[in-house]
Length: 626
Image 1 (cartoon, rainbow, N blue to C red):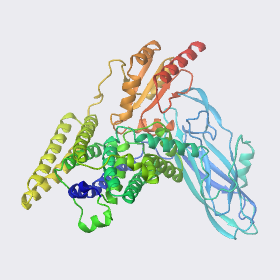
Image 2: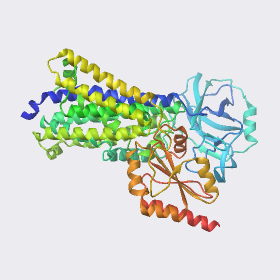
Image 3: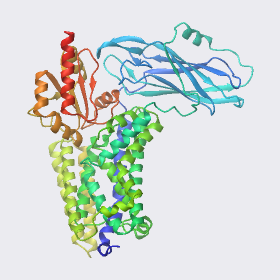
Image 4: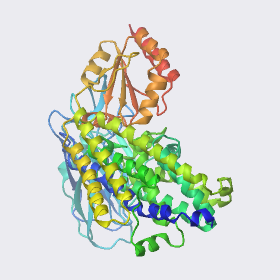
């Protein structure tokens, strides 16, 4: 072990003590998602009722079970066909949870209608009124006689002339009786379908049982998720944590190979566990029909303030103003044989995930958007893949510990480095206050900042009064009061005035209105929509380097493009629903409304050439029509 490491025990104990703070940060992040889960979209209730009937009262082992699923859709609403007209529309799909060995062999959907709506000039394939879906189930030869519990599930997205609701799943249990003496029943259900021949037939996985078959593009989406997670390491959101992690790895490398491997694996575990927590929140939100997306907790002023307070505390810690040691027994259990402690490495993984959420990377939005409309298993698989991508550098270091020789040797330079990292953390807090300024009134931001200043003063007093327990207790009370007070001020503050964001001199943005965008496209205009948020650093970088440039501004002027901005800084269920409609759950996201066509969806990585080419192509197609 390096002599410098042995002489700096106070800082190493501090790292163990900050682990609970990182855990608390992640719990607060989930708590900020919880209101979203509890308050579903307005009108996100079910708009279709599901009922099922079997064609016999009992079935012999090895026989085929015919199931009729009747879907009664509310008046003035429709659901997409099983084979929708556009890729971004969510298909209506029937699935089953069946006893072991029983499989779904065929599902036959009714013929769809081609209907026109205000949001598209072309008719689209939909179901409305009451429709019936037929399914055939195959019983195994060795299935035991008796009554078996089963369940049908219908996943659909309901729309009317003006809006589409988030996709939901309607479930209905039914009993399947295996035995002799079965009689034909429910003939009217099947006769009705026979009178309307089906056009959409799917062959289900013959070996599928209770779990749903894997989506056809799951492997590709898992790869995109891993790549997106890996690229997150290069995003500015993760930089403060990554810098501190490099510092910790340098110390671990100085303590021996085993400590380095265990530390990197503990960091990986912290990252993956955080993503499992996010996946759980996404599943709960999906079941509640609620808004959920990447970085959605940053829409809560209380969370933004809490994170800013944490950045300030960590910065003060880097400067040696305070430490929060764990009780000796807990520290020994967490630290094992390492001074840094597995708890500290695990906490840094939690913190890395937390800081990564306001950034989006190429491929990440596509993968997360795909996951949020899939089954629970797929949601967890995609989120796990993103976590493994973010943790990939640490996993590689664990697999090839010899690469640690490329890390600098521990020494006194680390004191200077640690102090510099404190300034980096303060820079992160400045950015968080910028985000907060777009969420709450300016005077409230000032009061929050004064509370954080009081927190820093109380922390200095706590450190300055060594050996004076009464004063230190008072300072500790001051730290707690300032922390709670700053968060309470943010939570109870009035919202910021609309349109508070600064306008660009190059492009004159207007607030996004889907109805207006559709109307303008119908009148022959091109409408470019930038889905963005003040807390999204990737959004800001793309706006500065790609959109707010002379070339793009000239193209907008040449093609008479109407630029609209969909601001997701604060919670907006309408924007979340529109992004979900196009399979996206993260910003940045870009749409181009075009006359006579469905909106053009841009890729995850927007470039000047791609944007200008899309404008040129859209305008030329309009010219050909006229």
